[in-house]
Amino acid sequence: MTLKERRVAAGLRQTDVAKKLRVDQAAVSKWESGENTPCRKHQEKLAKLYGCTIEDIIQRQVSR
Image 1 (cartoon, one colour):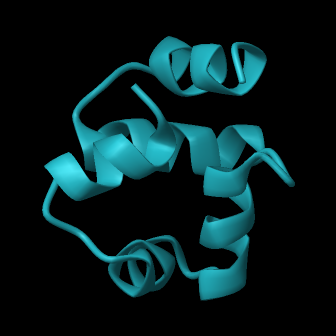
Image 2 (cartoon, rainbow, N blue to C red):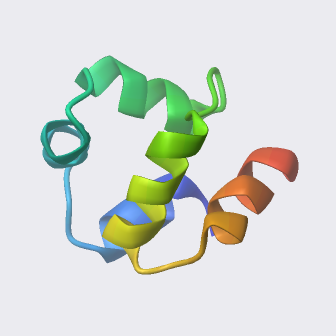
């Protein structure tokens, strides 16, 4: 499952995620497109927000 799919499944918009993680919306967009990878701190927050494990977040980055 991609980061975008996880976000949509959680019922969130990119702007919602950006506010919760205190990052720019462009950062969330770049993570979802694979242009950038979230740092460990943000991987942890994304996992909690999306109800998955950090490994799920990392695996998505590796398998793109």
